[in-house]
Image (cartoon, rainbow, N blue to C red; front, top):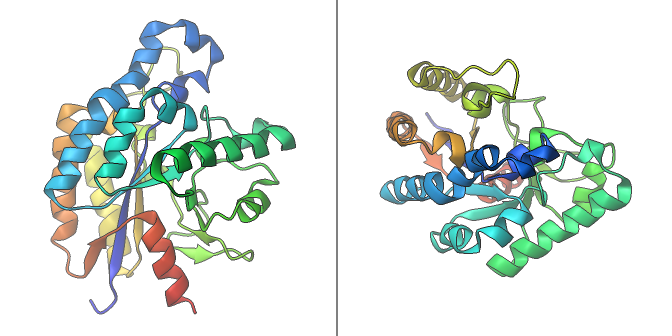
Length: 261
């Protein structure tokens, strides 16, 4: 292939906030919270070891509260050379917030990431991939360079306000297949091999079209021992394709801007 295909592996380190944002009563349920705790404590180190093995730079979207609670764990992401992106403070859904609260949460998330990394985050991923009518304007106001939320395309593009969009989709996200809790109705854990075969098929189809790919994972789900083994096999499958390069979302956004000049 003449055109380079970029692949961004992204990880939403939601921890406990994935569960408390769904149901505030989960703050009082230690077992429910423990689902999330597994992510930064157990799943994340496995993922970091895997990425180091293949010298892959990835992007981790982290709520501000998680940075506060697991500072040493999140520092390991930074020290390994990966990107930290904005993901709210307590995994709040922007479409449920007032104008004032949405702005406040954007600022607090920026502050926590800046304190940790020494620089402002360049990218924003909304919890649950939903915006308010104001969100895109706020991203421009707060000087974000890219968004990774929309599902109206399967290759990067540029919004009218100049922000690069790195499209995502539930199909290329582990949560629809692996997120499970007895109090979350309709959720059935899918067979791991079948899920990875789905991702391989979609990657192969997009690769044939010369399109870059953004995949979304959660350490509390993909970080289970056997799933990390499958993720390694998926990485090797991707690397078998000529002209593929793993990169962070920030770098993919820059490549997109340069390619569209």
